[in-house]
Structure formats: C-alpha cells, structure tokens
Image (cartoon, rainbow, N blue to C red):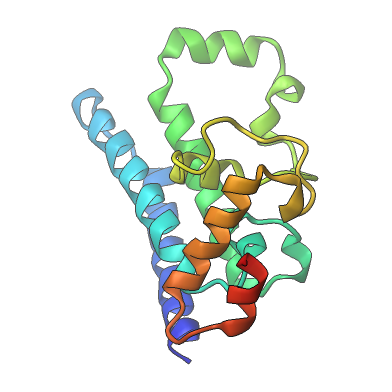
Length: 169
C-alpha cells in the first residue's frame, strides 16, 4: 500500500513540475538554474523509482504496455522533462544544427520501440555508462547492469522479496 501511495504522490508531483518546467519562460540567467533544477529532479526520481517498482524492467521502462498506468505516466513525464532539459540546455547554434537536419533525424523525439528510457540512462549514469540501444528485455543488458538494477529494486522494497532474491542469485 505504501508503494501505491508513493507512486501516486510522485506521479501527481511530476505532473505539476513537468507542466511548470516545460512552460517556464526564464531569463537568460535563470535558464541555467532551470537546467540544473531539471537535472537534479531527474536524478532524484531515478533514485526514488526503485521504491515503487517490482522489477528492473519497470525501472528502465521496458514493456511499458504491461506496466501499471502510474509507472507509464512517470516514465512519460520524465521523458518530457529530459527533452525540456536538452532543448533548454543545448547552445542555440548546436540546436540549430540538429534541427536543420529535420525532425525525423532526432532519435529522442521518435517513439521508442526497444531499449531503456533515455531519461533513466541519464538518471543512472553509474549503471549505464553507454546507451544500450538493442535491449528488448532485461537479459539483453550487460550482466553487471542487469544485476545492479535487480539489487537496486530489491534493496528499495519495504519488505523482503524472496523471489527477487532468487532471481538475482
């Protein structure tokens, strides 16, 4: 029950924060602060997320259609925040070069068919030193990353999850 309450609170908070950050019109000096705020927010959510997930697949956003609605919403809002971070944090000349090639060439704006959510790769840099593209299930990840994610989930559970312990072992 505590996981459901935390998930609901996180989802509602993210709704408010995502809307405010994406609609903000900061001055030039404040825009740097906005980028730092969004970065910190994504890093914090990546640390909180295992507390509401039951498996590593849920943390990295694999099989979003089979996950709970709240987890899908959290991943979607974090992805919006990452795009906001990139659009506000990239220097204007680089942004022009990227968009000059066309919207179809921007991979982060396309719908994701496989691989972990880009925002979680950003939020857990110690687990994902490089972006793994060809991941359709957890076993496609490097062994160290898959085990680390499962242990991350196991340690964040409110009570021992013996089935998860056997899976990690």
